[in-house]
Length: 67
Image (cartoon, rainbow, N blue to C red):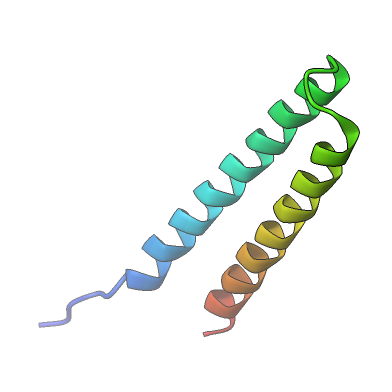
């Protein structure tokens, strides 16, 4: 009997959903900045954090795709 292990596919789906959520968060934060609800310094700092998280997620996805 062969049991198919799809652990990596589930984790990859999870990471893709996390990536989509991060993109939505960036879009919402950008709207808030355009409506002048957030000052420029906070906007730049938060974008830096978003960029780091986005890079980490991309590295994890790439690592799973290599295996």
